[in-house]
Length: 54
Image 1 (cartoon, helix red, strand yellow):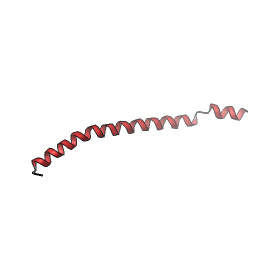
Image 2 (cartoon, rainbow, N blue to C red; image 1 turned 90 degrees about the vertical axis):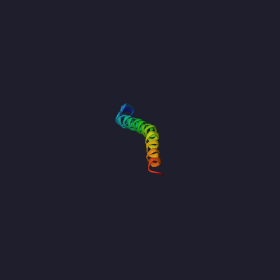
Image 3 (cartoon, rainbow, N blue to C red; image 1 turned 90 degrees about the horizontal axis):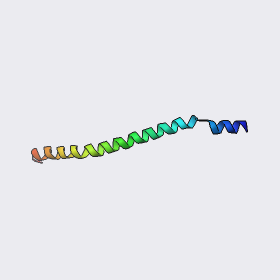
Image 4 (tube, rainbow, N blue to C red; image 1 turned 135 degrees about the vertical axis):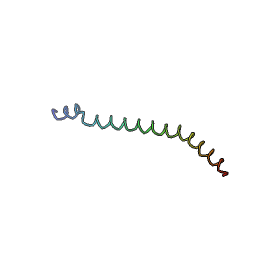
């Protein structure tokens, strides 16, 4: 019974779960930033292409 209580109180996996959530949040922010910035960059490439006669 004592060992069972130690397992239930253990916080070893909690830190890894928190790191996983942080990495997931960073990934979502990066994807959103690339999607937002990508539209502007695409527009610039189209303008350059048109200016070059493409």
